[in-house]
Length: 533
Image 1 (cartoon, rainbow, N blue to C red):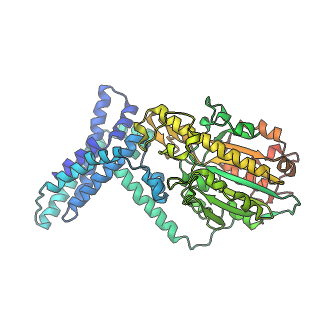
Image 2: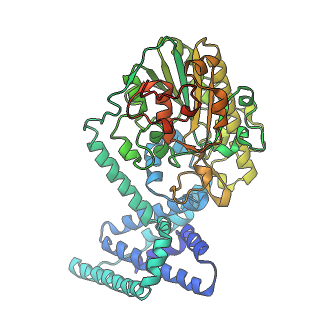
């Protein structure tokens, strides 16, 4: 009986996001309400069967308490931010740092978990459960599981055709079932990571083994800035009604307006921004088997460095010079234990001058990472007020959320403009390429943050900004016509273009290079590809 009560509690109280998703698909007719009841009965039978399989002392109560606690936490995030707890979310959780994870803690979470998790768990602790001798207990549990499965089979067979068609058309609804899908995703992610860990000793697959670079007399430096959680539609350079780019607007930059990310979170997108695999073959797990863009450039003589103000490079920078700056103690740039992105520019000029050859420096921003948008911009860049100054952004007025987010874009605008000013003073060919890893939802359709599966992710999570600036010396050295490049700013691009575009900018000759995926190639004054020069 305890398992049945727990199953009913989970279905009725910890699956609000599922019921909203199903109701939005079905509508509100009487027949559809019968469907909702049927789905609820099916889930109760499934949960009752699963719980009964493991309901033996001394694991019974601890198991139920753990399940209820997990369900309460998952329900809070799924209901508050309109997300699903899938493998991507689990990976983000496992790979984030403590400071970033702590921003997800709030009084709202504590209240929710107390009511939906702690109180039921307390009642469970006080409940006395009488167990039979183990053989009779085993027989009884087998009977419960058998009866539940038999009734479940009858219900499914009675509505097989309708359920089959509904399931195929709305297969994404399974991701809202709490807590089975979050638990399934957790163990699946652990299994994948375990296998990847044991394959680390395998030889990394070399790509572009034929890559070479022709010697030139022109020195160049490219700074590749990886934005965080910046969505393209919030940039005034792309037509946003607020002036979020007051400084870049004066810098003669080219803003590409139709760029798509390869994922909706950092763990998915970041490796894709350096991978040669392309849309058809790319996955973070597959990308780990190969070298990346930075390996190829370093092997051909480019001096490569990575400076990080985020939670790491996801393995991309494992074989190059790497600096983590997010824990610096600068009193101005790191006033509260977290550094603003201008820390990435500190000592950057010395780094550029310390290298005599061609240089690629990657700057990994904290950018607009939520939910604590208000922490990402210094006071002097808070142009839009009032702003949401709490972690549970879903409980803020939506305009204040947008204000806090827009202020992060204003600050990013300042950081990029300062970087351009620095590059202008170097006296040789310099350039900056800024691309965000993914976008963000700010309450549209009650969806917040990012990380939804691409199949159901809104465009706000995949439409990202990409901005390019180059010195006259750079345009001349690379034979790129800036007018032709600017004319292509509205063409559709994606993260897939980055690998080949940077190979082209550094004149890497290899059969892996594809001119059609080089966004600079059509603007070159000479039409031969780097692989043929």
